[in-house]
Amino acid sequence: MESENIEIKLLIEAIYLKYGYDFRNYSMASIKRRLVHRLTASGLQSLSAMQHKLLYDTIFFETLLLDLSINVTEMFRDPSFYLALRTEVIPALKTYPFIRVWNAGCSSGEEVYSMAILLKEEAIYKRTQIYATDFNEVILSKARDGIFPIDNMKKYTSNYIKAGGKQSFSDYYTAKYDSAIMEKDLKANVVFADHNLVTDGVFGEMNLIMCRNVLIYFDKTLQNRVLNLFHESLCHGGFLCLGSKESIRFSECADNFENAVAGEAIYRKKS
Image 1 (cartoon, one colour):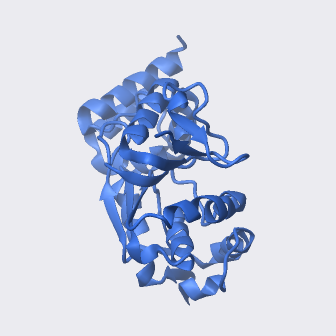
Image 2 (cartoon, rainbow, N blue to C red):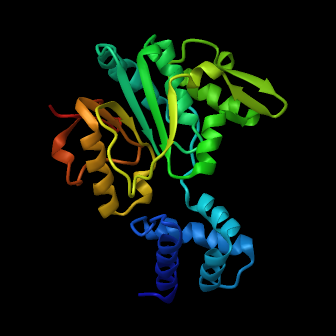
């Protein structure tokens, strides 16, 4: 094994032992890229020096934790996915008297608000409970605030229109200086909560679980653990939505799902 990889393994083991955050089954390539970024930005000479610093400097560790979190997201990301959700999945959800949605690994919340908007336009938001979870409290706080850079709104508006949006996207936020503040009623039925996909347990009887562009950062062992967690958390006939580059093929629970929408990573738990 290369010396650098040994240093990385020792560093993530140190994080686990000191702070309880478990990155041991994350993709090595992803972890290495993020650690090298922080190493360069901090001016430290080596990963071993970084390990020493994070053990004795909690502020530095919190900065590194943000680096290691998966925070690449946007509203109505992959518009064809949201269009498929609206046309192929929502009709099934409408048959339920009460709907539970789990947005796992919600990051700063852009997809949570996208889902709330979609459910509101389909007139089922009032009977829906959304659980938005992430292991990083700093990023979860941003999600709870629902304040995004105004510069992003042009891109988000384009996504929203392509996703079949029914109103003017600007109806859902208030522009103030350089920020867009999402309307409060969009989070009226949202519970933001701490949950770590690596170590925490099931959310029971969900009708839909959305976890997009998270599994790609995990190794096969952790991917299987999380997919089994989702399978146990879904009700019969519940939907699992993954990112465009993610799939349940070759996973341990592949036979427990069927593809619900051709061309999209939207699966349905077999009854």
